[in-house]
Length: 295
Image (cartoon, rainbow, N blue to C red):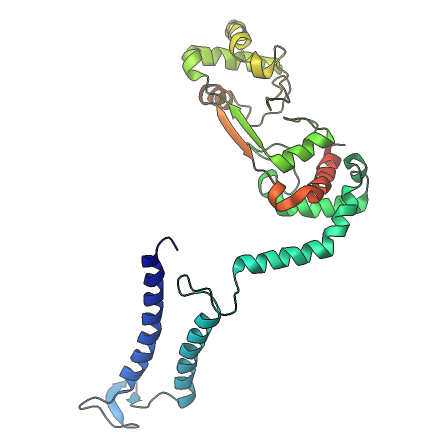
């Protein structure tokens, strides 16, 4: 809890609600003036049916009492009353850690055995591929797709086009440490016409038909503002994660509008680091599976 106030706020609200349930049951059971006796008609009739003043069955009533007693016992044993941790000492973090420890003891030796094998060799091992595929489904398919072919903004991992390098150690590094891709917004530096010209030049690099005069003007601007990351030949750089602009593979869309948007407004891409919850051995196995997709 952030403060003792909220600690007591939770305790009071919880207990008041529980005892309010008990009070409500007792209140509804009280007889009232002018109320018909038990078993007699209440005077309410509809569709030929007559309502009788019958009390709840005892078993039903005790079921309500049991739920109240159960809730109080539960709150003594388990956390639920503000900062009170319960007499059992149970916590979701503790249970998670215990399950992880149990899982590591059971499966750790298997992953360790795979980790002792070079990634390139794992890519040829059917058992390693099957295990790596399951890891991929759990941790990677949400962004890259179950077939690893990606989508707009998420790279295709089944081809030979790599932003940070497709060597086994580079793939493993991407998994463990994550990546942060930044394409700065060039609109302020280029201006509207400059964006048009550079977009025309970039499209021409992959063989698309564009206005030659605009593309030539864009080439001059590209050589000044873009080669630091994309290199003079526009084939990109693994060091910066700058994509190759001379092929037909586009991470954020290949339409003229998408390219202009990328140049003008920039792009931010983040591959989260998986080291903390995957660990070295599982990342090694996962790298073997991903490496197999394009090799």
